Image (cartoon, rainbow, N blue to C red; front, top):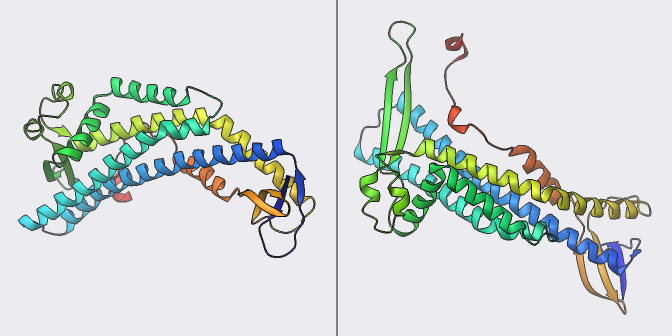
Length: 302
C-alpha cells in the first residue's frame, strides 16, 4: 500500500509519498476540522434566526410609524410572522444544543469527557438563569401543545412633551401564564416561577446570551485540537507546494494499492477558512438586554 499526496485532476501532477502514520494523522485532522466547522455552522443558524426575530420587531415598529394597520387580519399576520420567527429560533437552539456534545466529542477526540463538559456548561446556564429555563420549557410547549407568543402589543408614545418630544414606536411580545397553564405537561417547576406575562424579547436576549456563553466554552475546548489539525494540513500544503508551483485546488491524500485508489480524502482549507471567519463574525454576545437599536436621526441625538 502506498500513501500519496496529489491533485485530483485529469492532468498529470506530481505525487508526494507520505507514511501510513501521516495518512492517519491527516484523516484525524480532517475529522476534527469538519466537526469544528459543524459547531460554527449550527451556531450561525442559531444567530441568524435570532437576528431574524429582532429584525422583524424593528420592521413592524417602522411599519406602524408609517402606515395604519388596524385590521384584524393585519394584526393576525403580524402575530403569525413573529411566531414563525420565534419558533425558528427555538428550533435552531434545540438543534444546536442536541448536537453540540457529539460535535465537540468529535472535535476533541483525545478527551473522553468533552461532551460531558459541554453538557455541564449547559446545566450551569440552566440553573443560573430563569430565561434559559423558561425558553427551554417554552420550546417543549411549542413542540407538543401551542404557539409561543400569546400577546403582541404595538405602542406609540411621546418620549417627552413639547417641541423636543419624539413619538416612539415599539412592539412587545409576551407569553401569558394563563395559556401555559392549559398545557398540563408544561414543566411545573418553571411555571411556578412565572408570575404573569413573560416578556419574550427580554427572555430571548438572555437565552441567546446563555447559548453564546455555551458556544464560547465549546470554542475554548476545540481551539487547541482544531489549531493542531489545521497546522497538519497546512504543512502538507507547503510540502506539496515545494514540488508544484500551481494552485493547490483539488489537493488530495490517497491510499493506493496495485495502481488502484483504495481510499482518499480532500485536503482543502477553504471550508476551514469559513470556520475562522464565522468565529470572527460571531463573537460572544453579552449584555444583549442592555442593547437596543434606534431609528433616531443624528440631529435628534445632539
